[in-house]
Image (cartoon, rainbow, N blue to C red; front, side, top):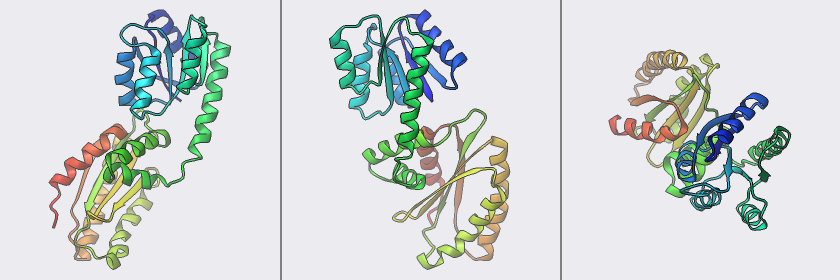
Length: 271
């Protein structure tokens, strides 16, 4: 799981990070010293789990969780505290917190809690009812609410690995009739079979006639694909006498996908 720790005491913050890194397979993607920093980081990086202190300066853990939940952010949460007051625990339960751990947090208690949350996370992934391509289309082309929900799901089900990036290819099919789509799809299917080491997602938007191809791999793999794509696909389209303009860009995270596409879309001539 991708974990964020929000804790105002540096010794506890770093101790939790070290405990998780040394004793579990999970990744601490960031640490924050108060709820204000936590809100900004969580909205930007969309962790699977947030571990937060309940009392902090500027914004408490409960205030932070309340604000994020009200804004539609989805993640699991653990509250840690030196206080065992009933009101704190009741409010934490109301916010859907998975666990309320008292300081000092033991490695056994933490591992047991993380294992339980990871099991829930895995089970939730199998409850995704649509194909990933459908969420890609919603993220790029639907209403703002649907885009936000789709992006949260994509963060759950797609990888963001070190040393790997996303390649975004966008093509405009405005001059291709529906009964001709299979004909122009063939070059794309052919080149995908040549690069089976890459992961692919396709999205097609009927109204504005854009096709988006998303690849995930190392930068060198994507550069090799880009060269082959340019040579093979564009050549085949010339043979078919089809003018299909394409653009491409690289980005590191899912959050950057839409900006990459919009930049390409403005540069692609809509012939």
